[in-house]
Length: 505
Image 1 (cartoon, rainbow, N blue to C red):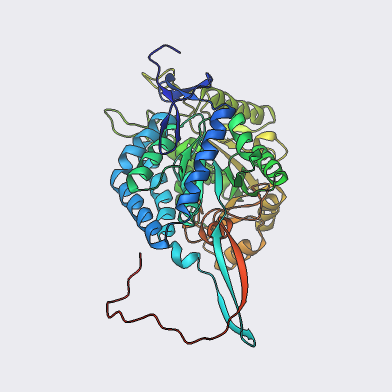
Image 2 (tube, rainbow, N blue to C red):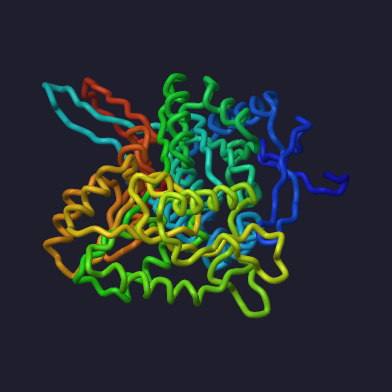
């Protein structure tokens, strides 16, 4: 690091905060392989300062009226919508995904912001009159306090937006710990919240590594943790936070299958398999990574998929003289090596590499972290390359003889995040949605991410904790209920005369 290398710091007390820890990590432009800056790694003092600031912010914000809080949510939504292009460029520069994909990520996150603007209806209590003579019972929903969000590198804007709009709307204060690999989107969002009128401390950005994560997990002043990432880390987050008395929603990894029946439109299937397998360079927990082809369609489907893969253009996600590419680089050189290692494993285990992306080179970007779309046929189901989450642009074909064999393969896996079936048989689709042990299911839809007013989350090793992300689950997670039983005398009262139209503030 040279003296002029920018250091990406924290956002504490409603303003940027330079780090004094002396620890940093590199941030790269994945398309060029060049270091674009350094991100601060918080020490214990900075972790404590961030949480203390959030506590002060919560004490103010939770006292604001619903009407005033809702006004800030609407202002944030309008600012985000007007300036989303700025955020997309930041995401592409640090993550590598193409600009249109970055924009799509923001728009899906904006759906949750829009849901959160309607929060008064979703945090209402209930009232039962005269449950016993002269006795009424009613309930209140109140915020938790300071809540922690630990987000992954693959969606630096959308995943935090799965959580923080609802948490903030409900009256909580948020400490967001973004990935060290693409930390700048979180700071942009913090500035936008400040511009929207959010009080200082209600949205805090704490940059860091495991030390910052553990600081949030162990703090007595943090009431809940929301996490998205790999299954081993999700399990660690869940166990550690639960042991420290916190609410936890920890979303883990995936190995998503697409079951293709012989009656399916194979051109549609090929298009969607390519879109779902190679979008964002496969760095999606909802990416399709295995196609279960019910024979006799495998050979024809492989030919169609390979043909479409040959037309994909790989390059800098920001675009060049030829326009925007179809796919950008992976996040880091280390991750590229990991993905290549899984292709090596598949080949060693007897799979046939139909399209090999291991040696892809992009002219003029030879130092970038590029990995070409890869198609593997006849992968053994006991291979680690089949069982593990690869998180890269690798699509495997497994040939099955029957619908039931395909369902059994899906259900035998340790993950249960997303799955899809492609068919024109409504009865088969209905049976599929009933039998598969997976949290999110697509019928002729390859990436079945629910809209914001439903909830996102899988089964088995893809979700730890009882609450999914956003939707009704989100509002339940970020509030706690009080039930009040009351009895009052009934004296005659009056409030004077005021002929004006009633107003709230």
